[in-house]
Image 1 (spheres, rainbow, N blue to C red):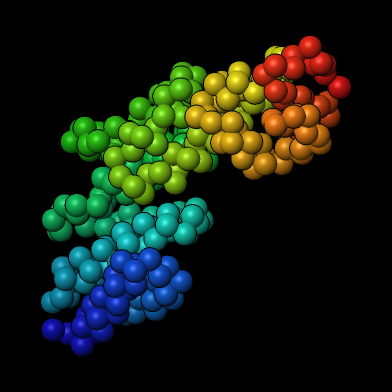
Image 2 (tube, helix red, strand yellow; image 1 turned 90 degrees about the vertical axis):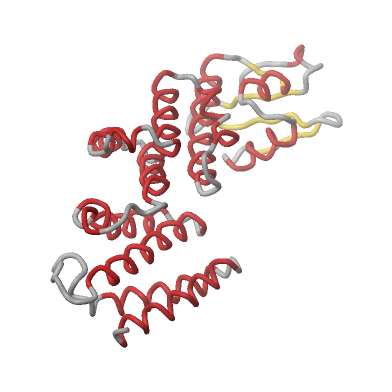
Length: 261
């Protein structure tokens, strides 16, 4: 085997071992080294020279970039995801006919669709969708992203909030959770305008939380300020997502004290 190909292969094995251990700092370090080494292969994009080891180099590089995309999800770095996905994409589109179909291709294409949806880049979402084959569109990973986009556009927020349970792969949970938070923010923002008050039970059901504690944690995440405790449960006053007026979330048995301030 070519010495350069051997060097990259051995380093990639170390990367995968660290990935299995969930040592993502080490993975990030190895990935930087791997990307530098890959620049020595003239068979890779954008040159695509037909060297004796071209197929093996393309296969190895494609697998490295696939792992890089998944790593970016694990470390919750959307900028890295976008960079690594665009480095990977030519291996699916430009040299796909020279390589066997990767088992990770549809999973990663589906992840990219979810990323675009989370970032509200709907036009790009549909552009990427139009580039996919009929076979790809039938894949569970792609269908999951398409169904989520349809639910989001239709305002069927209960289906969006339940997407975590139907995710086709564990890597999808990161983006589905981000999308669920976006939906909850939207519901909470509309509720702040529509209601003078909400009892805790009502707010929990509306936001599809399974417990009061989950609701309280969400309030903390969106910078809700707890200003008083009136019994075992808390009374919350919080700014309505950038609005100046305050919205009160109160214990279920204290509706008589409600008012907007």
